[in-house]
Image 1 (cartoon, one colour):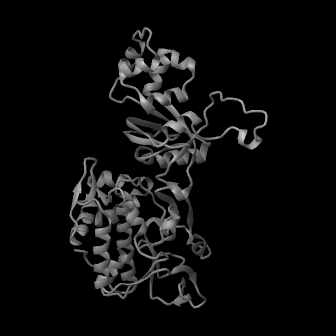
Image 2: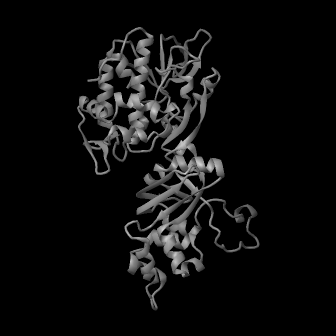
Image 3: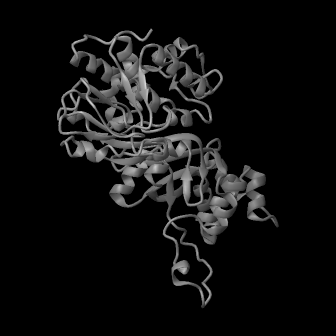
Length: 423
């Protein structure tokens, strides 16, 4: 996006990328349907950026959801609004949009240099790259860094830029996983004792994860039509309906991603975080209690709950996983658990597995045009900045908006005035 703004203003732009081809994370984001942006109004849209909402608001107002759709249309890609309010290309694919975009950039004179990994600066202030032909030094009048965060390193965003900026005294926030999965606390249910000849290390109880029974049968299966509630230490409450997936060691998926920042922060502060899961959000607590109390005769508890409430599969399994026999046998306790089952998570999954990352270049180390105060003429944009957002088109939109704004600042630095319209 920055290259597009700069090239349209007549600036000679050279784009360097460590990977063999550009846009690899962009293409991965579109693997299941490219979620370009979101259709909700500006105010709720901006609120998704939490404590960075005020910082990002003017840039998103200048280039938010409607502008992203207009930009895609200008590349010949029509879009539509899905049932969730998310915006997708009509064919749901990322590749056609990326091809059209790169074709336009090349026509505007942007020169692409692939397999060039940035190594910092030389003594004369030129950019240093490790290239196929060896190390090369490239002087530049101005530089814009869009190096990504620390997730999905195989696609290029490996956070290797961190020490290069840290050495320059740039204020940085640690890179942390965002929109990622979590590991649940190991079950306290009794497990079979290891045999006398078992290896001590393999016999040691796991600190995280479901029981082997649950993991083997239900890892990869979704919790559908549930509601998740998490009360933060600051008194804030997150509550939303949706779905997520059980993994071998815990949970992940859209509903978990929506609350991931709060869960991560609680784990960092307290060592754990507990959210409550409503397995039947369409049923009142009174109805659930009434149905659980209904005489079941000779039927098993599983058959009874399936017949009276439709509870089966992974929903019934997680009750058996987390509740004691005594709790399952007590109608009041069981009914309460069905409407508010506590699930404790104690660790995030590794940063490289997360969809995105929090942390990066702190905004206090940047001027209003996104230029590094410690490095005049060097601008930053995208996920390497210290902001985060849930999935739903917010990540991509803010990345595009910051790229556009940083390019605007770079033009001003070069004395070229304001950035041109992208229309």
